[in-house]
Length: 287
Image (tube, rainbow, N blue to C red; front, side, top):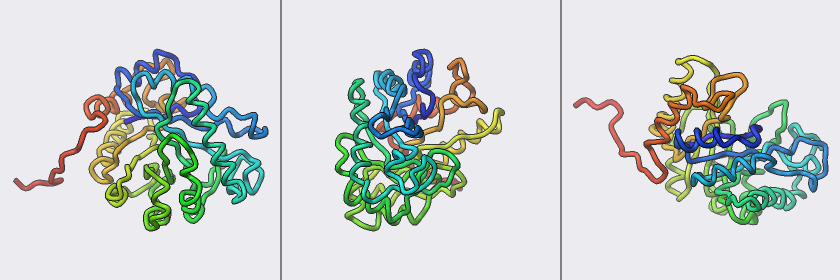
């Protein structure tokens, strides 16, 4: 169980202690987010101040993975931070770019557990983003992803489960070899069992969900989401988006004190530890 520090920069020690100590979260998602600037690739710092958050979190033994919002604009078909696609002649450059994120964390003593090819490649937002079709994701996984040295490879991280992406990755053995973790977000989705990926030796993670709201109805929706991710989709991990949200109650408040939603997530994280197994049970027993 984990959460994201994307756009939160260097989280203070108090927040790190509450999140990974008191609540027991064991996964940190950092954003490769310093991309949306009109600069050349060489001037980017992929992780930025989040590297310091990762450094402090690593002392708690957490698994850390990184997700990019887009690519450098010089790699894109539209030369813009919003939308567009990754040019095929820039695939090797994109490998080097992702590797630079890995190396940046290594410099502060953080061994990245996994790296995603792209966050929400199926989504069309008005902010930093890039589109990848199932065919494009498959092509990159087949021929380029294993050039990234160190972390496990994660894909596709769509906004919700999309069968076309799932099939493009898992139905071709040469493509499937290029990924270790099948990941999805949980926005407007019908949960689908991830046993196909798991039977192929891959983990299945739910890597982003946020619940709008500041009341107990919203908090309990988070609890139900976690439960359903484990019992319906059989996910191996659940990652909430944003430890601290400027608008809604998240895991910690603006002073990094634990919130009611945070305690709900901690109720799972503290008592279901990495490596634990869920025992199968009848959903509606008659006896």
